Amino acid sequence: MLERLQKIISAAGVTSRRASEELILAGRVTINGVVVTELGSKADPSTDTVAVDGKPLTIASKKLYILLYKPVGYMTTLDDPEGRPLVTDLLKEVGERVYPVGRLDYNTEGLLLLTSDGEWANQLMHPRHEVEKEYHVRVRGKVHKSQLDQLAGGVEIEGRKTAPAKVSIIKEGEQNDWFSIAIHEGRNRQVRRMCETVSLAVVRLRRVRYGMLSLGALKPGEFRFLTEAEVSGLRDPHLKNTAITPKAPASNKTAASARTSQRSGPAAKPAHPASSGRRASSPKKNGPSGKR
Ligand code: URA
Image (cartoon, rainbow, N blue to C red; front, top):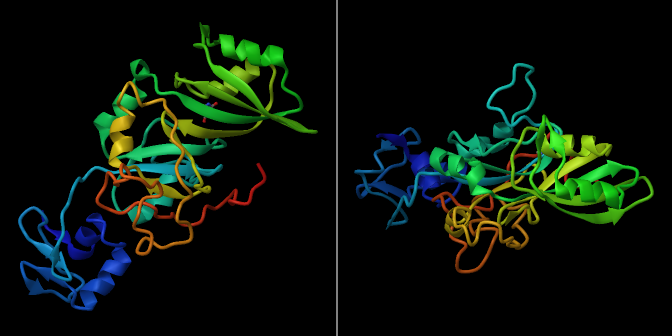
């Protein structure tokens, strides 16, 4: 299928679409050995050889796997009758349709996976798969041990008891306490409803981990591509819930200058040909300096 040259170059992980246009204009791109300087040019990546500076591009995979720090005030649906911001608004530069793996409430922030690989998403969301999700919860006032014990043992929501959860207190403050809860079910508004049953008023809810993946140093509205090891690791029964700590992201860099993954090490090969370590545009709310 014919595709615009800049899309092919960016999909191969060379650089962003905008920077690809500059490469084309500079005469550094060839299609089947012929220099092309017209921005409207198209090629078929499955039959044509596109090269930048003489180096042919390789398209490793067409599937996209993204880890986004969803800010508060974004919908995880693909459209909203009320016109509220959508998480996909934060991923426009990706240039392809991706779908959220499960959902986070409008007022919940944190780790959200999005992908174009429906089979992978379904596997992760299947209850049998039991991927552990960890949330940090800020509550109004104090959280008592008896409440945490109830949450850990399971509470009844909609006539069905929740599975055992891992809970621990993170921080006690004058006005608010923070605690962590790790669950592997994915019932609608589960953490908020669990808290309601033990009379805890949630004032902030952040998902910090999804299986082996953590938010790391991403800030609200930022995203990165998963590595191949992460994509397969989430499906691996032995690895999927073993948290790994990513290194600090190459923040404030453009797609062109931040080509390495935000994780480092031998397994940090992006699962998509486009480079990882990109940033979405600034979130509309809840800037990165928000107090936690
Ligand atoms: N639990 C909730 O209550 N809300 C979310 O967004 C995710 C888990």
